[in-house]
Image (cartoon, rainbow, N blue to C red; front, side, top):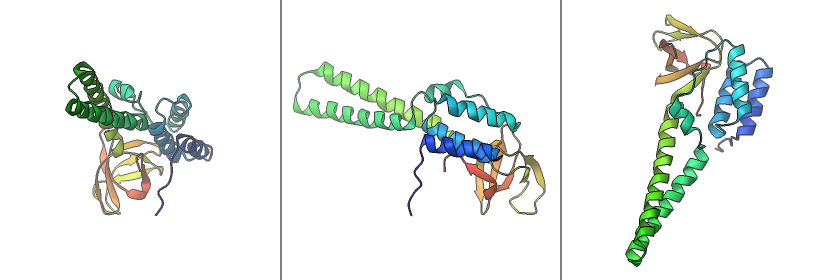
Length: 194
C-alpha cells in the first residue's frame, strides 16, 4: 500500500480549505502537521492561531526548549545526524590508517558528536508530538470508560488539542491541557503525527 506523501505546502493548503469550509478541527490538524515540516513558517503559525482563536480553543504557548528545537527541521536534523555519523566514522578510520593530524581527527570527532547530539535533542523534543491529537468533531464526549454508552467525563470542543494516553479497541484515552481525561472514539480525533 502506498504511503501518502506530505509536504508543508500541501498540508497548509489543505488546512486553509478546511478552515474556509468551517471545519476547524481538520484545519488545526493540518496546520500542526505542516508545522512539523516547516516549524518556522510565519503564515502557518498565523493561520493556526487565527483558527484556534475563532474556535475559542486555547493554544498552549510553546516552551523555550521547543522553540529552540524548532530552529532545526526534522529533515535537517536527520541529515546532520547522517553527517555526524560519517564524520565520526572518518575520524575513527583515519586514526587507524595514519597517526598524523591527531588534532584534526579530534576536531572532526567533536563536531560529529555535536551533530549527533543536536539530532538526538531534536528527536527528544519532537517525541511528545507523537502523542498529540486534535478533536475533529464538536461536542465530543470523553467518557469515563471505553464503551459507547459510558458516562461522559468531559465534553471536548472541536479543534482542541489533547494528549493520547492509551488505546483500547475503538477508543482512545485522552487528556486535555486542563488535566481532564476520558475515553473518546478513535474517529473523533486525528493524530498530529499519523
